[in-house]
Image (cartoon, rainbow over all chains, first blue to last red; front, side):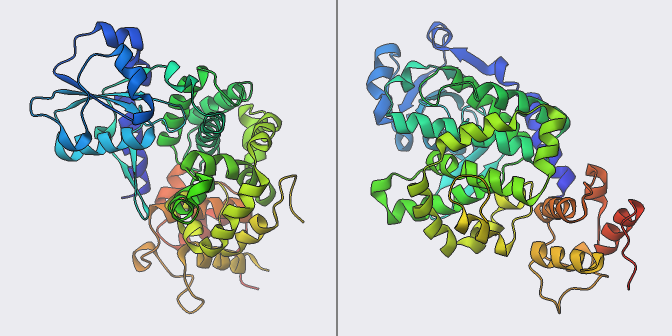
Length: 328
Length: 82
């Protein structure tokens, strides 16, 4: 695909699907009459969902014939599985996505990620759910770390959209405004994170992600299989690598600094948020794996659209990074 | 390091080429790794190395090493051999 084709495909997908037109509150979902609806929900939210929605629960592998609408309630992985299932196997199916926590933006995204031994990332406007529902109560009881990492995921999407070499001035303006706003949010439960998450996801889908996601995509399957107890996931990796990658980009090129000035991004606030999310011990553990897989990280498609060129010797920066300022 | 050497090093890095595989006459069709993502990485690397940011039209219009040199020379960055 050519660069111009890559851009136009992404932009056309979004022009057809403005997120606010597809956004429902829970009360709206309960008041409309859906065609032959069934629910797929992750175990963690099944009981709370059953108190509000009375449609039958099913599993993705056993969808009854005649189902016309699938309401999927869960995290980004489950929503992405349903999106890919609909695109590949049941194009007529209507999908209503309800994220159980913010972060992935899967409820509005034309991107779907399949977690296997390596990440398989698909992009198509056919992947965008027909409707999405904001239901903040689903996240209220989530563990604190999970909520905090989800905030890091949103920040990573917004920041990498802002710095993306593929971002238009309009995307940068919106991303800067979003980053300035979420810098004021608490790094924990706050229902504003849901809409921020959808917006950040749409911005990165219109531009690209960068090295934070290069790290996350390569390391997640490896860390998950080698260290189950540490509960490594995409959002945690985005949170941990937000500060190192931002520091790397700032120290390697003046590009980010210039863009921040041009578009009114308060970099100090972003750095403060990234510093608050940084976990030194987890970073050291992840870097041990990253050094063994540096070639893959540097050549990951996400890293190749980083705002600063990721070189073979760039690993030296991350090896020496300790959290504060720029390593010497 | 001359600008020619800087550009060669950048392209070796982005396109995963060896010294022997590189020449200033290379074009996209000859290099399997010169895909649309490489175009983005080259643009980021040129900005970082030469302080010039390609316009989208320039980035898409680059079909070989000489096109990169042509754009940069138009911006006053010399690639004259010493």
